[in-house]
Amino acid sequence: MPKKKKNEDKAKSEKSKKKSSSKEKFIDPEKLLDEYLDEAIVSLNISYLGLDRDEYKELIKEPFTAAVGQVKSKPKLSTILNRLLANRDGLMEFLAIKLAKIKEISTMNDSQLEFLVYNTKKAIISLIQPLYHEVLKRNRSDLMDILRYNWDLYGIRSPIKCSKCGFNSIMPDFSCKVCGYVMSMKEVKSQIDVINILKDLSNIDPESFKEILSAGYFYYTAEGPIAPSKLKPEPGYLFFEIILNSNEKKTLSSIHSTQQT
Image (cartoon, rainbow, N blue to C red; front, top):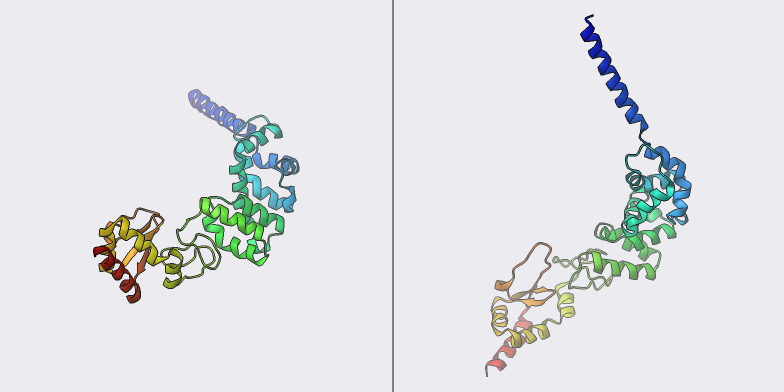
């Protein structure tokens, strides 16, 4: 073999060894998690959840790995914890969502359910139905109050309150996003006090009132009643089509006639 070829092969071999050696020097986060797991559980104040070791490992593996990063020297647990707890609320929400993937909500013990309810924020839209039904089943009015509060902050807050569960969660098809109940047109009209809100509208915006009276329907939004021609929906904007019956039209027509005299 030519000398030049030998030198090239040797150089490649040494380069390959260096790469391999370099890779081996990085700390394996999963092995480190095995070593630090018990202390981490206590330090993160999640030991009360009562999970088994494998479940705890699955619960915190992703944020722990991210906190370790790619390092060649073994970091102290305190360093990893400081990184994890830099955004404690975000971490707890991540752990809550992860917990819901590890365990069925219906099989959770009370501590696990409480942890999930307290820490579910942006994910409440996807978790609200199983959470609501489980909290209702366990008769936990305290947790139900927290669910309502978090729904109003992070969920799809509706201007129509469900007459069954009490959440502001009725969707434009009149179904409840939380409990699944479907409200009738009559229930919705009663809640928004249809005659009085349109009577008020007749004083504020007579033209819209006349249009609604002529069309026989209007849209109800968080801002109140809107005439059909004035509705300009945007993504995520909730609006409800409210159809007037003959008695309502008659009552509203008399209001209109009175205003014209």
